[in-house]
Image 1 (cartoon, one colour):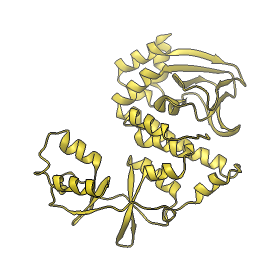
Image 2 (image 1 turned 45 degrees about the horizontal axis):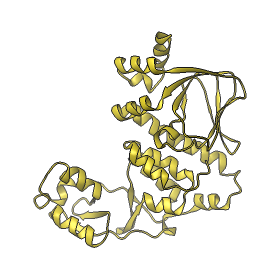
Image 3 (image 1 turned 135 degrees about the horizontal axis):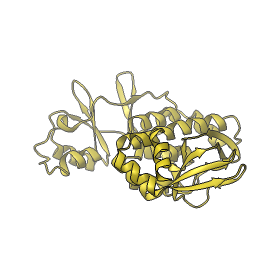
Length: 303
């Protein structure tokens, strides 16, 4: 039985990317479950899930408010949104045919996500694709005016955060003081190639490495080039851009002028529907605990 499971996983990505020892341990931890055609595997907004589901045989439909948003077949995985966030599932999963499923325990899944970047990246990109399917399926069927409005919002419709500017040679000590004084979460570094420094950059690249902030310059730790959007950009496209680059903020620029910064939390405050939650999973999959916290900020999930 274990050999059969292992052979199956070896032939289906991303499990095939795991080293032999991890694949063997995973195969031993898997449970097998059968669902007859038409049965509900789990329901939208039910209790948070304890397993990642992998289809061994058959087909599964994913639904939001009884609307089909995706169809899955042999080798496909689902349920990982709930696993990572610890929140209720955002979709209903229904067996379209008789289905045999492999069930991977949550703790095993999270260990693999943390340990193997390629394995993690597969699921983060899968969320983006599923989000796209969801939007396409719902865009012309939902009567929720707030949802429709969200799809048409542009960057210029939001209030941008003002951001301090610093020179390349300025020290991190001075930059930290400036950020504190102006209550800013980042600064723009001016120079030949503009860059950005965030609170997290300072923590990871200076504090965590026990460097003297008075002896480290902005140029040494800044991230460049900037990820830039225009005021005309649709918010939905900005979300996908954040997901693609694994970032929490984008710089808004009109011509040669930087207007400010748009952060993920600004979008969350604007629209608490789970379109944002799904993309949070993409953006924060590198940090499961932080992702779960961000998800908890969302009060009303509709997916």
